[in-house]
Image (cartoon, rainbow, N blue to C red; front, top):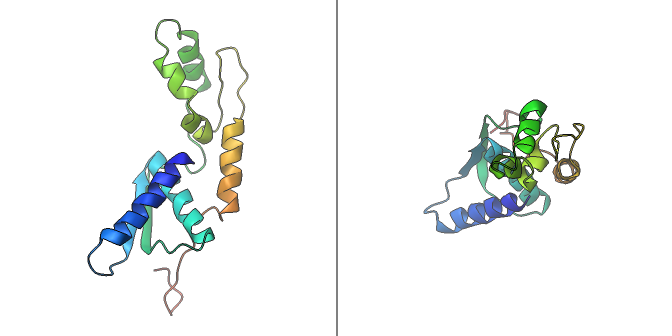
Length: 140
C-alpha cells in the first residue's frame, strides 16, 4: 500500500506538469498494475480527481500470484547459504500479494495477514476504479 502513495503522487505530478488538458492513461505491469488499481480507486474514494481516462494492467496478479510452496520452502531452507530469496518472499509487498505464503520452510501454507489487510483496504476503496460511460452508455 506504500507503493500506492508513490503512484498517487505521480498522477498528481503528471496532472500538474502536463501541457493542455488531455486525460491521462495510468496503469502498470505485474505488481504495478495492482498498485495502480488501488491508487486510482483510493483517489476516487477520497474525491481527488485523477483525470485518468484509461487504466491498464498487464500480467498483474489481481487474484493473487502463486509462487509454489515447494519453491518458497526451498528458499527458506537454503536461507543460511543465501538469504536474499527468502527475504524477498517474506517482504511486505510479497506477503500483500501472494495467494498462499509460508514464512519458514516448515510452515503450513496460509494467506498472510498482510494480504488480508491489503484485500480489506482494496475493498474499502471500491476494489476497482469506476468505469465512466459516454452518453450512449459505453465505457470511455
